Image (cartoon, rainbow, N blue to C red; front, side, top):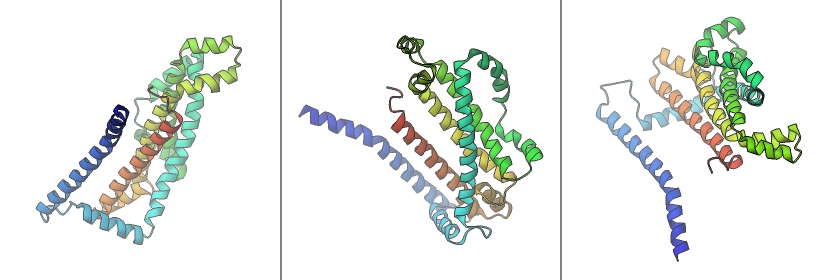
Length: 266
């Protein structure tokens, strides 16, 4: 009987965060709707939830600027995915070397310390000057941001591996390669996942900012064009889509972390 009660308590604790999140979201939508209804006509720049849903449906069926909405979303996701994957891959490799070798870390440390405070958006004019306004300039911006954060977090994770574990593995005659993938990488994965989360969120924000400057398709282009021509409902749709897709990307990476790095924090 006691065991059954403990199971019910555990289930309630698991469900409660979801209920709280649903309740807070519902309350926000109600307050938003009432607020827009009360001041309707006083501010033409405000859009309610129902109008937002209707405009999203219209964009999904008719497109924007002669381009389907799915193409705008796919363009932003492609740029983000390409730059993020390339930057994360290079960042993990460089981070492992930096964490494993004090000499390499000392050599690259000043470079990372110099680049880290500079916001990636500051590179937009320079990248456009060097590479033009094509796809490569947007992807290279995302690559730089992803590479930086993933490399730094991976290096920190490798350096955080307890030396006792490494010494025990060495005692059993573990080769350097096996030590890397069987001992060091699993221990460093929580740090790597943290770097991937930060890099993915930043990459999604950067691609939108890059599309605001020079693009013919993408959610950033949609927002810029809608704002220029005062298409307020379309502007709101673009902003909400950016938030929703960013949320889904973050939740997807969190699921991967729980699935493959389940020992983190335990």
